[in-house]
Length: 333
Image (cartoon, rainbow, N blue to C red; front, side, top):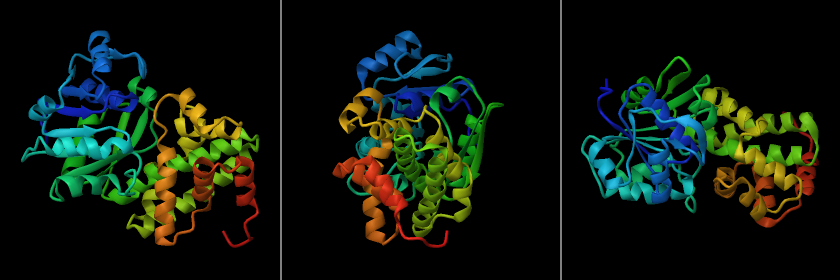
């Protein structure tokens, strides 16, 4: 069992990284937070809150801002990496330049590696070694609600000793972690749900209503399970927090950047303009390509993923994409 006097480093100072750093620090854990933007870190340090991404959430005294990644790695054996999937390879490579015999890594990245389609834990294993304890933190969460101490439940999957230690560090009356040993299932759930949420947003942006949205969520879950089970995930994982729980949350609440992206595309906004309006990273945009290509490679039918991919990367009209889904041949559910 880890001592709360041992510092933990959070890598990634966006909304979710900041929220998790605050949650850790509020439970008495000495916490160091680092991000790539030096100017942003200076603002965090002086304001003692993330004014840009998590306004109104004051940093506990146990949360410190660290401007140097190497210095953070020298102080912390336990690291929580909360970066977009497209920066994961770069960040993990830098971690490899600052090794530790005691290192353990937790990932809160929801997506597949850009260009390779690798799962996040495989990126860690390939770059830092398969013997390194790794866990994935995922589930139905919005950073603003976690930061404000609103009730939240998550899944931590992977090496069970490290998962239990991290769960203990994060646990509070308003934050309930559940343990899992299904790394693959939890990662696939976190990646696929973002793409389905774009699809649900497109449908709503077109004015298609609640019936269509629920159909997309339900059939999206079936696609998620087909891919996840094929890659070694467990069916029951997709019926829990990291599967259907995260899927429903992301498809139905406008706090979701992926849903908002879909709403804008369905309403006729271009992809570039939608990105400018949303400002923060929309993971489902990258994931749509990686998951579509992976499904093609594995011969797995994922029609919702395919249509979202075609809207984003081939410029297909969103209405035509939804009609393509509705006109598919009749078959058993």
